[in-house]
Structures are given as C-alpha cells and as structure tokens.
Length: 168
Length: 171
Image 1: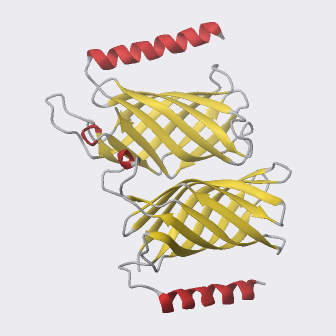
Image 2 (image 1 turned 45 degrees about the vertical axis):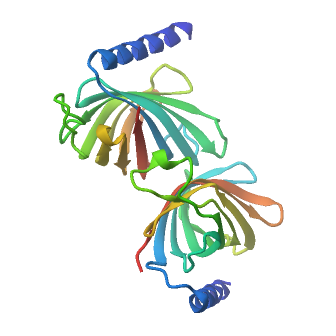
Image 3 (image 1 turned 180 degrees about the vertical axis):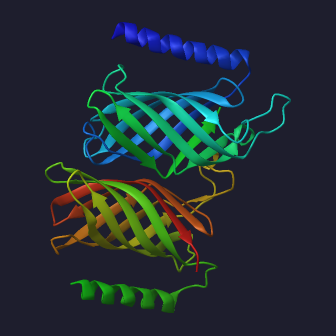
C-alpha cells in the first residue's frame, strides 16, 4: 500500500510539474450525482470529486474519487485515473487567446474499487462541455461512460447529469 | 387514493393561482438524480421527474409547489414507485452569498425546506420532509444540490438525497 501511495504521489508530482513547466491549467471537479451499475456497486447514489491537470491545451490528466452517499455514506471508494482529450479544439491557445467554449471530451483511463489496484478500464464521454479556462469554470453536460471490470469480467455503465470543473 | 391526490393537486394550484403575484414564469418541469434507502438499508437509484409551480416573488418565506414522481431501480426491479406533493418554502432569497464562484451569471441563493406527502408503491400515504441548503435560482432556472429528505410514518420509512435537481420554468 505504501508503494502504491508513493506511485500516486509521483504521478501527481509529475502532473503538477508538467502543469507548471508548460504553464497549463488545474481544475477541481465535482460531479454531484452519479449512477453506476456493476456487481460491486450497490444501487443508490454516488458523488465524485477530483482534480484535472492540463498537460497540453487539449489533453488533461484527471484523478477522481467516487464515494457512495446512499445508502451507506462513504461505504465504498472508487478512484479513476484518466486522460481526457478535447475533441473540438483546445481549452486555451498558447498565444493567450481564449479556447473553445463549447467542446466535447473523451476520457480513457482505469479505475479501482476500494483499492489502488485497478480493476476496470473505461471510456467516458462528455458530449457537450460549456465554459473554458478563461471563464474559470466548465460544465460537462450528460457525461456517461462504459467500463470493463476485468476482475468480475463484466461491463459497467456510468452516467450523470452534469459535472463541474472549477479552474484555479 | 390517486384520485384524492389529483384533486389535492388541483386545489393547491387553484388556490396558488388565485393569490399569485404575476411572475414572468411560474410553472416548469424538474429533472433530478436521487438515491433512496429504506429501513433495511437497501438502496435504490432514481431519476426524479416533476412539475414546479412558483407563483410568488417574496424575498422571505416564498412558497412554491412541487409534484414529483421517482423512476427508481435496484438490481432486480425498476418502476415509478413514489408520488410526492410538496410545499417548499424558500426561507430567504439573496444574491449576496458566498457561492458566487459557482456561477458565471448572478444566481440567487434561496435555501428551502419542504413539507409534503408521498404515496408509496404499496399505496400508503406517508409524510415527507426535505431540506435544500444549496438551492439557487434566477428567473428561469432553479438548481438544487445535495437535498436530503426523509419519509415518515411517523418513524423514518425511507431517507435519501436528491443529489442534483434542475428545474426550468417555462410558462
């Protein structure tokens, strides 16, 4: 577990370094309501908080933590580590101009339930995002995803109404 | 029982309409995501569909009416299971609040409490209490985040959280 924590810290340190070196953006993200299916997930509701770090104007690295709030608050913990790519255009331009205010984002990554060992690979898609770095916030409307749990050998689905990014 | 609820709904709307201050938009629809737990700690996921009626424009103690149903599911079952009629009261409405960073445009913060009745799938009518500490609105839209609720008989039969609710006033 200590080794895994170190790996996580190293990954975050590299991300932060890239962000500082390349002068990119950092966002805190909140997804107030998420519904998810799968053998390991109780029906109920989940909340996700996380951070996104801009590696390039079109690529972000995200780390999310999803926890159950109903019926057992904080009864389970799931992390997601993923890369996101802005499909329609950059979040900002290197010459200082504002980026695309309307966008779509494709995320690919891994997730793990109650442990840092990944058990799921997933693709997550935000069909419409509104906002940009210059506005310090971005809303992802109707994000949804599909994952493959290679421990239980099953697909799981994930959906929400909206997800918020607050750039700092 | 369904007939009684329908009559009650129309009576409420009639009374509200008679006494209403003219608002630009007062009637709209609601969409939300919720999680519900029963006494045995069995969870259900759900989507809330509703109608919202906000006839008044009071700065303090502003009442409104909601009629909701929940499409809820667990691993074996899915269906519309709860029907609710709720009177909400916005305790105060202000644009001077600490949550301005959440919005690009100014939104009013109007924390509210709700009291109502809920008809369950077993046709019992129970009491319903809710709290919306993070409720924001402008003239067309209402957002509510993390609104807990309990269903009482008079002990707690169900509890849950409406994680996110979005209402659009269209008429």
